[in-house]
Picture (cartoon, rainbow, N blue to C red):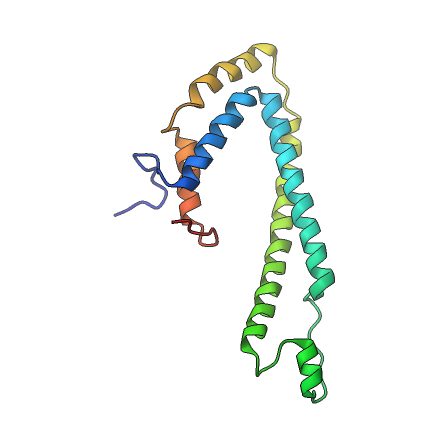
Length: 170
């Protein structure tokens, strides 16, 4: 029986994973204290929320918020249908509109999850440690960063390969 959460024995060598490994190691080397990791994660979370929120706002302006049910429309002429872009005669346009609405719903969910993470992150910022503990962070960072079989690194690698919406670059 194959365990879904089993950590692979060898690190993946695909370009995405190699890029992830380099970034993982760089972030540990360059941000080797608890305080630096707190600040880095807060900044990453805020930048993600800002960007995702702004994209959602722009999409809602362009395509509507997608929450109001469509009112019945009077029979349309070919000119009004062409202006609308989604007709029974144009299933590709309808499919694209559905994909846009689904993406907007997904962005709303992402923003809700990011807000939840932000609330949890605020608790992480409450933690302060003595200088001796910060020094231990720096020592351990030097040991972790070059470790290709680091369990956290491999676990995230596995998640990258199980995410169906990430493009396959092969």
